[in-house]
Image (cartoon, rainbow, N blue to C red; front, side, top):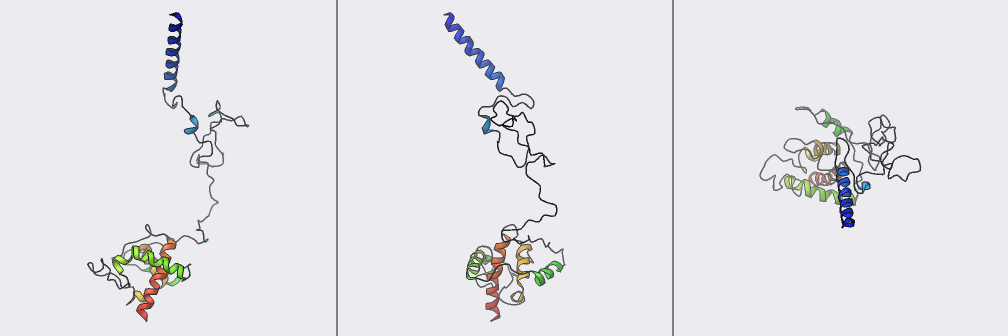
Length: 217
């Protein structure tokens, strides 16, 4: 009987200690089960653990610091990722600078004119680029501009004023003009910079140029 009581008493004590250990208080989260599931051993890019004793009870490190300590001490914003060199500008895989020409203010065509005169496609007019451009054109442009670019797509037949890409002034537009308008929109056309990547916009431009050529012949 005494043995049973001692077993029950020990079990109750162990349960009480476990419950007390699991209770959180202020910044203390309580006892954690499988702490490696909650704490990253590799560096977290956007945060630092500056307490060198964090996870010391679990540590297998040879520098005598806690398992969860992961501060490089070089980032002034309490993050682990390194800051880029001052003046650094991101480039894409083809080493091209990002397109940052802003949208013209109401009634102005200053930036559109600059784009028309200076922007050049970084993509060749190859069969692969034109094929991909046609697929993108069909997805994003066909509903308004139609298959031939005449502005007679399903939407263009209902809402008048859609640009004719194969005739009139637009058929004479430069590749820079086309890219700028796809990016920022013009007239009834809304901007597509959020929906279509820069590279895909240039692919569409290449395909639209084939429609322009058909209209000019």
